[in-house]
Amino acid sequence: MQEKINQLVKEAKKEIESIGNLNDLNLLKSKYLGKKSEFNQFMKELKNLPNEEKPKVGQMINKAKNEINDHIQIKKETIEQEKINKQLEQETIDISLPGKSMPVGKKHILTQTIEEIEDIFIGLGYEIKEGPEQEEDKYNFEMLNLPKDHPARDMQDSLYISEDSLLRTHTSPVQVRTLLENADKKPVKIIAPGTVYRKDDDDQTHSHQFKQVEVLVVDRLASLSDLKGTLLIAAQKLFGAEREIRLRPSYFPFTEPSVEVDVSCYQCHGKGCSMCKNTGWIEVLGAGMVNKNVLKACGYDPEEFQGFAIGFGVERIAMLKHGIDDIRQLYTNDLRFNSQF
Ligand code: DAH
Image (tube, rainbow, N blue to C red):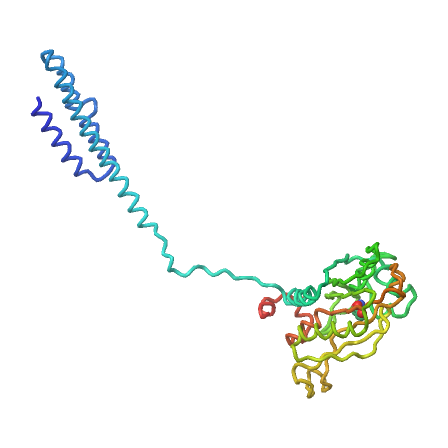
């Protein structure tokens, strides 16, 4: 019987070697180790052997079955590993292939310009403040030295929501809110960016909605020369280090004196060109010393405090800097335009 068993093991090993898939391997397993296998037959025949031989032959059969089982197990692992290897090979990612390009958005030129102005003033120690776009008449006009019947109200055509409330026509009411909020009447140094609204027909240079950045300093010493120095720094950062500024007398009810600020032409460097209408200067913004009436209305003693204010028109700065000749382009959101900046 030993001879037969050895022969069977040999055959089984040979057959296992030749198998290439798990299905065939399972069939082979039941052929050699299943109920109808020859080994099972041997086991059944054990009872016919003399008693002293039974354990020896029994052990022999078990050993042979274990040996075959081990071989099947090894083969099974080999087949599975090969399958995984093949799959890995097929699923390899070619990292040298160019990827799909995703269009990347960027900030609108007005946002970029506001952030540029913010950066300049943050660098000078200013804080950013915000105010509501629906504003009270009191803050938008009255406390800025523009009482109800003041003719200068006509400078800003307004969109009223009710008798006392309107869409703010400028960011200057944030001056009032900030000063009122400051209960201890401490010095103030803020900028206030935001959207403002006017009852205007849109054309090349007008928009019913636009952006401003308000600047306000109130302190015991905040002189006109401080204002001039601040304006010079801002102009040079925005338009180039060689720029000069010029102040011309102007009028705003909330500042006294008020100035119109020109920057030396960055296109012709003062020689005269179409950009500066042959004057060598370009008008950029309005500013001035905070009117005493405003300080008083907000609870600051004008004998102790003084201040200056600046009003940036963001569209104007962006248009000058980037040679944009129609304000409407800033609001039509044509990607061909927007993506240029
Ligand atoms: N609020 C003014 C406007 O919208 C602009 C302005 C001018 C603001 C002078 C200021 C300033 O702070 O000092 O027309």
